[in-house]
Length: 97
Image (cartoon, rainbow, N blue to C red; front, side, top):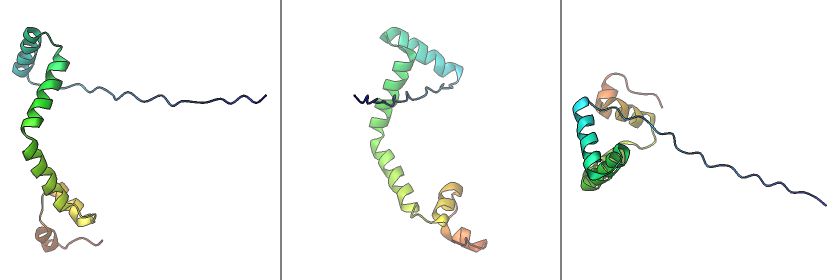
């Protein structure tokens, strides 16, 4: 009788990152969480979701602008990273692809 061993890859839990905020914001988060009966982590998560939902159109515009710049070329990568225009890059010697 052959024994078949099945291995299951355990899904990696995403690493939690500390969030650094100024003391006044931390005080607001602490007070808000306390009076709403939430953890600070849950309050911040809810607040970020609501904020981004309210700014959905701004996010869409920003993503569309970034995609217009990225065409897969090295020049587009440099433009996105530096904020320079194609003309400014060309004026200083350009980029050999």
